[in-house]
Image 1 (cartoon, rainbow, N blue to C red):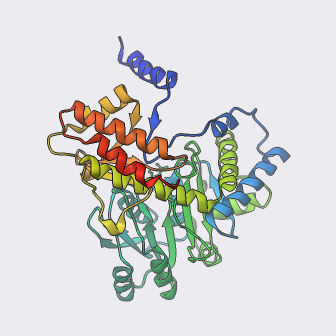
Image 2 (cartoon, rainbow, N blue to C red):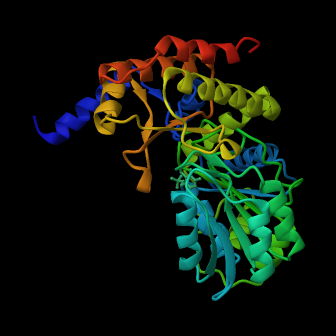
Image 3 (tube, protein in one colour):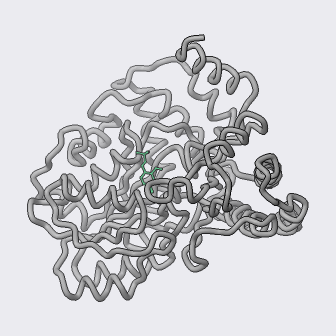
Length: 395
Ligand SMILES: Cc1ncc(COP(=O)(O)O)c(C=O)c1O
């Protein structure tokens, strides 16, 4: 069999019987959202699209808890991060950026590519920056902005001090740009209340839509800077986006099927209620954090930085990560992620996002434990399931 037809075989087998996607994005997508994508094509400069985009941007304001415009780029989340920095950085501007994993490392690279000078706070992977570290640095170096990855997906950490860090940035005359790609709508992120200037998320995480669009909110302070910046991008110009949004359009051809899906995903968020969705994510995370150690696995992130969206566990001694992940996928049809960057081979990451619910948590713990046992690693599957189940007693 050629390797191409072998690959097609894997894809067909995945489609024939659904896999449980427990990745830190993309997530499982509810059928309602998937079927929304099969609607017919429409004119992206016509009244139907205008209605669609207007509803999406209004409903996205609910998700971001903002009264400001939310723009939707046909790009993955990284496009949103590039858009943020392209629109506020002039050559030589300093931007404070805590680096504590692969995505914050990438944010630093984006700042450099946009002509900025990163002022780095380096943190241990598995932890993250504290407000006092940011305050100390910002008092020493005059920065135009602070760039922060709120949920570092590569290590399973959340910056619990974001609210304070945003205030420190404001008090010191800096903008705050937040990559909330893997957390918005799954944990607290009240953009206006916390004075976040530019906030970015992606469709494929806690919104439970397919990948393909980035959403970006922009504050009044950020606009004041954007208007004075010579923007180094045509596609990612916020000025172009604003002119088009005011007409109910996007400057360039939008990924219409993903917009349909996002529309449905946002309607589902509103039906559930943001508070309920955040609570559901928190309870499921608590169940993972109880169940996995009870089964015998060690958690990776420091307690104070633990993410409710990405559960990172250490690879037990003697376990070949590739064989384990392949067995988990082929035999149990559960897909989790391996470690990223320097944590490759050392950690596993479970996505706890979007449509996550008790059955997925219990199934994942049970299947992971079974796959560990298949590999000859001691795992108390029963204890893991019982410990997780307890967290759902009043679910
Ligand atoms: C925190 C964070 N930032 C940026 C990205 C990049 O997003 P994308 O792959 O959609 O470009 C991801 C993706 O997982 C992420 O989790």
